[in-house]
Image (cartoon, rainbow, N blue to C red):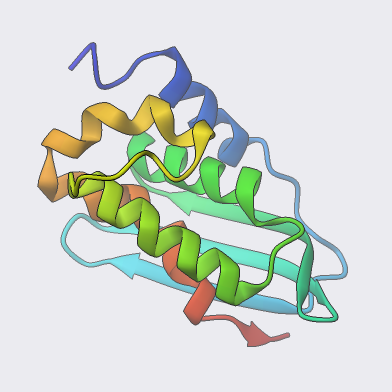
Length: 135
């Protein structure tokens, strides 16, 4: 487990834990992983179909937090469709398809590739891209 929970992954988790709420959020999404109980509530400010600010609240394991931290690091400046596409490529990478890591910042999550039952923990925040509703 030491290899799994190394500094880079914990740094991503810390990003999620230190996210501040968005006072002017335009959209919110809540997703759950019923298998392990992880929960992510994401808020964004969407302007001209581009995410200009993002916030996340996670209730779950360090891998869920790390995925949410990666989502925070990735989403600003992108559309929801782009974030969904990035999430799909990230999931394929986790599933060990023969492809390079789609996000340089995701490299610390490489040990999770071998633990298939934890992929959804990492991907939970990325699932919000199809679940947002206006506030």
